Amino acid sequence: EDQVTQSPEALRLQEGESSSLNCSYTVSGLRGLFWYRQDPGKGPEFLFTLYSAGEEKEKERLKATLTKKESFLHITAPKPEDSATYLCAVQAGNAGNMLTFGGGTRLMVKP
Amino acid sequence: KAGVTQTPRYLIKTRGQQVTLSCSPISGHRSVSWYQQTPGQGLQFLFEYFSETQRNKGNFPGRFSGRQFSNSRSEMNVSTLELGDSALYLCASRKQGSTDTQYFGPGTRLTVL
Image 1 (spheres, rainbow over the protein chains, first blue to last red):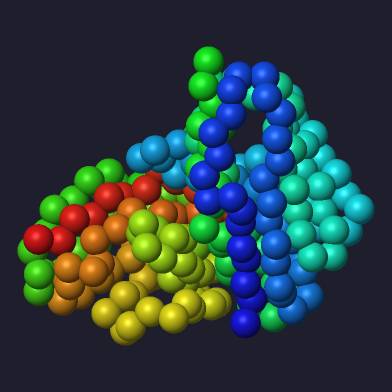
Image 2 (cartoon, one colour; image 1 turned 30 degrees about the vertical axis):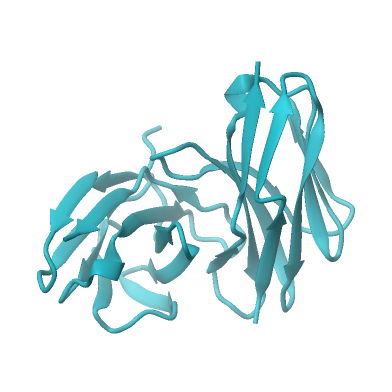
């Protein structure tokens, strides 16, 4: 059974304090790993897709990396507007186009 | 380019009733997936439709059903509502390729009393 575990569940940072969120996964044949950001009461907003170990993608203060067992979302010098829940999801080779999500990391950035 | 739209945004129903939710995908997207999000279980896959055919189904009871129309718009139906069906129901659309990104709509917040 495909599993995705995110840690920590919640993270409080001061503005400018860089950190990383972790997404560990067990999947039969990874086809893609996705990062989304979700604000309260809204749908998930797409951030990145990673397809193979060693791949990295960046967008503004965010950088996502992928290994064979986990992915990291690095946040450099975060701002209060980066506060949100960050969701990781995997698409497995034997599960059609279904995404299996982790529980998310709730990030709070204080000014 | 307009994003995924879902209607209604909020819904209050009582136990035993049924409900229909609607989703309009991004223009040109042919695949629509539905997810249920609750505080306890997180985001869970319900089903996926492509070219009016259900391609995959999650582990939910038969009370949950859906369909897709020729214009790619999709509806999901929940019959005989239970308190535990209270959740945010999210629709996601995708072009058609197997590794295309799924883009989510704002969701429909369903409350069952």
